[in-house]
Length: 506
Image (tube, rainbow, N blue to C red; front, side, top):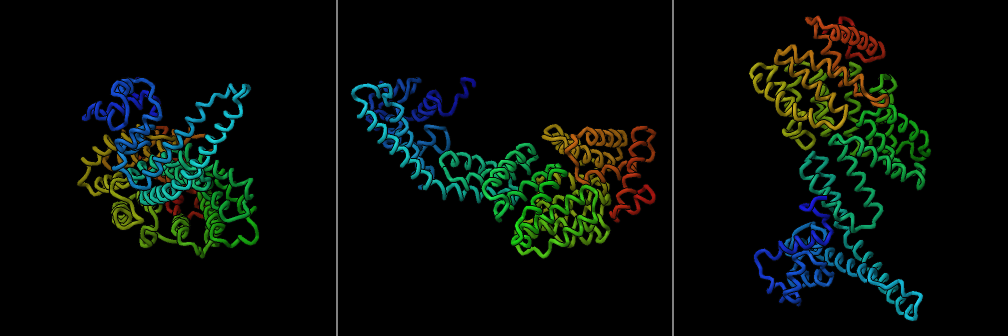
């Protein structure tokens, strides 16, 4: 670590914060208010070892926030933070003082004549530490609980800037809490956050740990453990690990006890199982399973199940894209899926309807600043003819930035698809061909356990069918594969691909 960025808890970092306190006030004033010699204040500011007693004096005499002084976290002064946080911070300082007392024990003297006195002092210090730790945990639990609730709400609204701030705040409070349930809830929320930000490895690692933690305790015999199983399977599905998600769903349904077979969470798992089956090519089984999972009595689960059903019905050809749009933005995730579905539909009318329905149209829609919304607007402008310049600027600017910062192969695939479709919209055939081949290359290079979502794959194949005029051998091979794929899917029950399977044309 560089000298300009020392460990926040090191003496050097504390000395830096002390010098910041001295900026604007004299050392003599600090010495007077802390009961210290002026020379000592000067020595501490220059980097001399700062005793905990001086830290306590700064808290009492100047109103310094101990969490800021010791760790660089929060506001510098207690007047800048809430009363509950002040108390937690004061307890933290007491806790550190108790730990310091333990550390000062001359444990080597246990074999000497003063061993009984040392043992009593050690026992008293440890008892003080345990009491303070318990008090601190009790006081921080409601703070931790509220921060986690706000964190989850921010993620549900896709307010990632606020979510990042709340994650940092939760991380700070978590250090002071021993509550296992709150720690698990923090892991669960962080997993969802990582998933939304395409950090698939982190999302899966956190959710897998939660799932494994539940197995020894309940063996999937209660509602809570079933929920963790669902969260794990949903994280796997959202990270394109479809086969593993399907295995988790099926195993969970087999292990669910008889008296919970009709419970809302079991219906939710069954619906997810059906959705993954549909993604993997078995729409008949998938649709039957999703339909059987209704009615869903839990209103928190109902939007996701409704979204699964709508997408499955569109693939089957039972309902049109316009009919699915008429159901409205049932959830932010559904809104994103419907915008991407409009890209597959490949008409300005479908994209205009999707933008009107799923962007800034209510709490379950998406905000304009979400990447897929900005892309949809750029594509719509190009398709309508008046926004081709803006579409080219989007290609060279925001979309290029997204490609450069993609965290996973599936994210790279998605951005290659977007670049491909936008290039075709602005009549840039060379770039369209480039991105068509690049998306195909990414798809072929994926690890065996990764299966890109069906919607992304069909956008690729549909665009391959539209590349009629090219003499590129690679594109010709893609067109033949696309024709075979759509024919196979139609025969399996994906009725929406009938025209593509029959004619090989859009």
